[in-house]
Length: 44
Ligand SMILES: [Zn+2]
Image (cartoon, protein in one colour):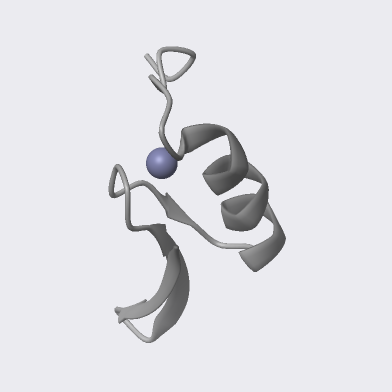
């Protein structure tokens, strides 16, 4: 799932599966759909 986290006074959205951070919740949600239970190999 996507978790909201705050760093340096900025809200980030973190993919709990792989730990990637996004500044847009929609980006995080979109990523998460492809990340869950699959190999996120498109991320280099
Ligand atoms: Zn991920």
